[in-house]
Length: 282
Image (cartoon, rainbow, N blue to C red; front, top):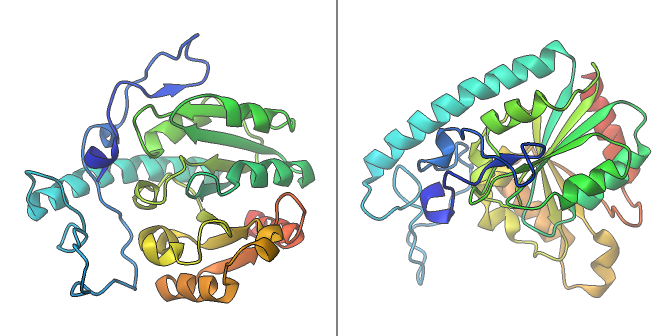
């Protein structure tokens, strides 16, 4: 839940709001607790020996002093507001024939490198919304490719929400028929439950993280349409079982598409670009 993992009001800024960033009014997600919206087909055994499992119960989580029923009520209230805003975002993207993608991962998976290398190869209009707790480093890396980008700093917040995307889109023009890439905050928990108005969630997993990530963070991989397995150029130097990783991902989400990529060396980039083109033209 966001109340236990750090989301709080007061530090959310959009790039360009002033020399130090003037906080704008955050959405309800900054104030209250949520759990993941998507429930995976795979759930761990509650009776597993040696496991103290706070993820059981109707809310799927735990917060001191709150009952499971109250947490579910809070989740419904928060997500209902967020989802209304997300539908507005989705209508905007549809009206302008724009493909919006929500890139999610843990920190260090290579999302920004994948984006920069992708943008260098694309020949249609693109824009990027960058989400991080602090700094404008990633937005600056994106702009170095010649692509418009806007940084959203979430302060203590651990994910982007639909209101943040609406505020960013208003400041980030994109031609009709283009692609809006949303690079979410590095986190495999809360972003799974927040619809931003995107067409697809794209989960980026690197081979340096371990093949069991889809089982450890099932809500994220259940919510994703595509998993990009990145940094495959490092496989000769790692003890990473690719087939086991793919089996785990499909155990959580049988419909997930998987691409193997090395953003730095270029392996698999043609398949990734072909997937983007297919989605843009869908």
